[in-house]
Amino acid sequence: MPEPLVQTVELTKRYGPLAALDGCSLAVSPGEIFGLLGPNGAGKTTLIRLLLGFLRPTSGSAKIANLDCVQQSVAVRRLVSYLPAEAQLFGNLQGREVLQFFARLRPGGDFSKSLKLAERLELDLRRRVAFMSTGMRQKLALAATMAAEAQLYILDEPTANLDPTVRSTVLALTQEARTAGRTVLFSSHVMSEVEEVCDRVAILRAGKIVHAQTLAELRIQHRIMAQLTGPFVEAPAELRSQIAIKHRENGAVTFETAAAPPPVLGWLATLPLADMRIEPVGLRSVYDRFHGGSA
Image (cartoon, rainbow, N blue to C red; front, side, top):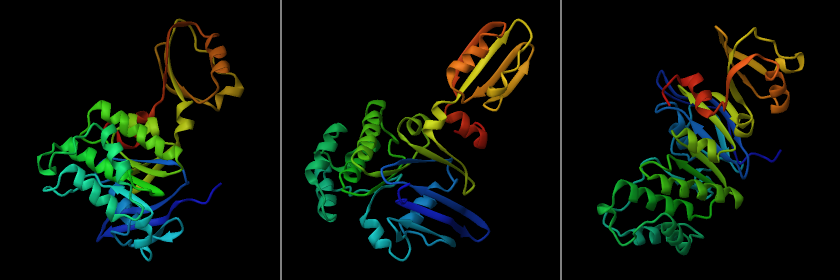
């Protein structure tokens, strides 16, 4: 396994008795898109601010590219391009001037790349920021963020206030960053986006990581809902450890499985089926185990 680009060990931030982040340990590999999920107040933004050195931890440690996020925070920020959830831009400048400012501010800034990104995001750069809509300002912040030659992009709600077409463009840009060898920390409330672009995901609740999973594992998990006309036949012994019965009543059986399809379908063919439906388990189902219907 490659050495993690981002690593935290028991990272904790307390405000008196309140734990905004509690014992967070994670490792993000180079070239990975890592998703952070959780409702407001779960600890996602606190984790990001600790990584960037904007906050000092109560205990634990965080490193990016083996640089300590507290002791070497300036060096860390040189490696990172950060899109905050609510980016503040210069209201008296035109969009083009904002991109030019950020390109000049950062060593190795690429103004021409930011212009190309703005074009892909369908952004009119002639308008002053003060007269831009919320969605236009989000596009401008995205163009400035993703034009940077950074090892790590931290994107906090990158598709907020964007229409579906532009959301798709943002997801494509995120995947292109991974293809180019960049690492992305992707925080979002939109399950479908996280499921589409992320390699792994961590779910936070009350400051703790309560679940972590690769999306490749999740994509092979399926839920099967069957209506039977006769008695239920137990799965063969070799499949039982991979099948979890979730509901069984009056001939209706619902179960989840990560087993390969052919053996499962072979077993299903032995059941007295009146009706059957197969669907992916999906990230929302996993999320709701920890947050009910709050997604």
